[in-house]
Amino acid sequence: MGELRVHSVLVTGANRGIGLGLVQHFLGMPTPPKVVFAGCREPKGQRAQELQNLASKHPNLVILPLDVSNPASIKAAAATVEKHLGGSGLTLLINNAGMLKITPPEDVTLEDMMQVYTTNTIGPMLMGQAFLPLLKKAAQGSPGSALSCSKAAIVNISSIAGSIASSLSLDPMHILSYRCSKAALNMLTKCQSLGYREHGILCVALHPGWVQTDMGSAGGRKPPVTLDASVRGMLKVISSLSEKDTGTFLDWEGKVVPW
Image (cartoon, rainbow, N blue to C red):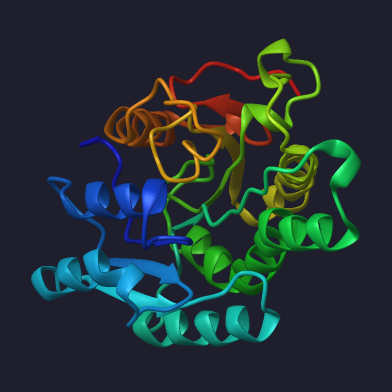
């Protein structure tokens, strides 16, 4: 993790699970980012207590009110981040916020699909658009032309559950809306990589593993990957990403996941 040096990072869905784990690890780096932005829907609520505790110890942590399903909230967050950065760009955007609903396929409703798709797919799209000017600024201010996460990058936290080709993703859990949203997120990542490459921004989709979090355990089974192993693995992968990796789908160990 020591190799990853980013001036600033924004993590969405940062009040628990993988998002909180990422924030904790960024703050604990030998050379931490100058600013770590932690986005969550209710920064002053009980669910953000751990973030509040971290902020009291780390002056470089800024907790942002951010609901990725709300365009107005995203726009306000972008303005706040720009003000905090004071003329410099945002190095790394990690779209981690997500939701999952367990429903038999025959019972999935329009509302289920819309809600999950809005959070898991449309949210990351809107975040990429809103923070594009700050990501471009980071890329322009970084020496060299090669893409990397130390220059400017969007990391979309996806899932092998969105892989159409992988047999591992086709377990009997009833998460149709989640699967569809993550498959769409993978396509979004590919499109972002093609559209933002000219601006010097690397884009990648990461499968964090089946992780021991509240969401990961929602189906009643214990996931095999610990939160610490997942986060450490993803940060190691992020630190090693280069030009050849933009637009790819990788897991927390750096292995390619089939689309």
